[in-house]
Image (tube, rainbow, N blue to C red; front, side, top):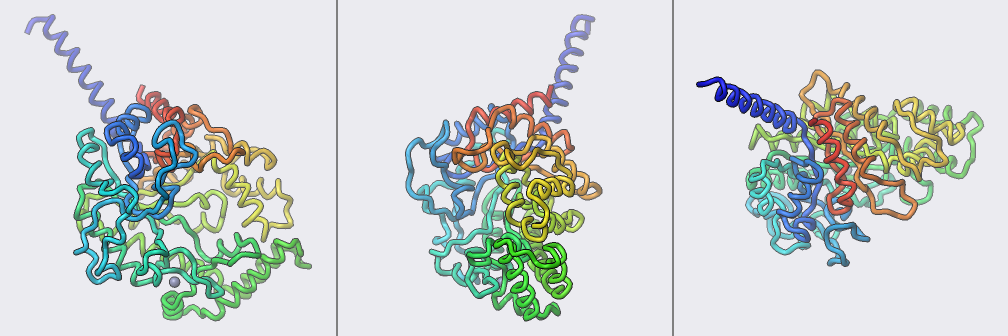
Length: 486
Ligand SMILES: [Zn+2]
């Protein structure tokens, strides 16, 4: 080898090493995109994947496989700068992949499993049709399954939660044996039938205490769950369910008065504590709900891992985490790490403005109702570790990307010592614009993505769904990733 050849080959070696390390650095960061079937149908699979890769450096699809929520698997209206530009057929929802009825034997769907199939897009299969194209590009696919059910489908009618006053709620009960066998069947079907890389089961809901404190004092309370399965399980666990009912009735009376600004003589804070001290069953029932939720996390995890141990299995934590100290308290990562490989922690900074003010005026305006609104917000910032602005303009302004950094840091730190990966959910045009929305921008998306990675998160999930994101704003994610890779 002469000197010139040596220099040339050394140069190529160095170049290929740099490229290799760059590829490693890139592949080490998970950049996920939540995407539903209509985007692939309306824009074409290859075109969608081109956009995701080129504009936002996405390397992982969170393909919405089962959902009855339009905001997760539908089309936005009004439309954005891509996708269908006129009103499509009415959204229906369901399972967007192929159904194999054999897996549903022994469930309430054994005679008609096809009723679960989403009718929205003909034979389009969000896994079967997309996986080969994604794999060819080296993109991973995580199947995303939500906890919603649909009351127009008969077997679901026996799976609903029942509230404090006996009203049937429009959400599924985690202690319902029919739901558990149905969910197990669906996970088996999905994991056996497709070469997916991971599975996310999503349930963005909360227990009885949060429902009670969020109650507006007028509508149905939606305090879960007083169905026969929960009552029996609770009794077997040694909980006096009659005392639970009495406690929550007392709490509802307290909330009703708070909404009418009828101040208890001893003040709201002490009155709240008096009820909790008199009825410790209130907290027991709240934790009972979360323990039941965790049983479902574990059921999903064990079912999927028994089929394919290498699969990444995790869940999503709702935004209540950021505004509700009682919700934050139950999210114990040392516990959750036992049956989650990853958690999507929702840290939608823009939408945090209207959502945060909603909590200050709602849930916090009960036991903290003696504290003026701006100071309640300050209290929230102090206990959650945020520094955002005052109440007056918050709803129109949104939170800053600094919130994403602080929130991500807190959960990355808590996950230390476990194998749990924290993937913050990044707000890109979450919720269609109502006219008084906080401003959205490419720069703000870029800053939010950078903040999550700076906090040590190994990945981000671009949210809520590709079909509602403006391409210009999506580019902010690509800007961030390019900056990180240089
Ligand atoms: Zn129940």
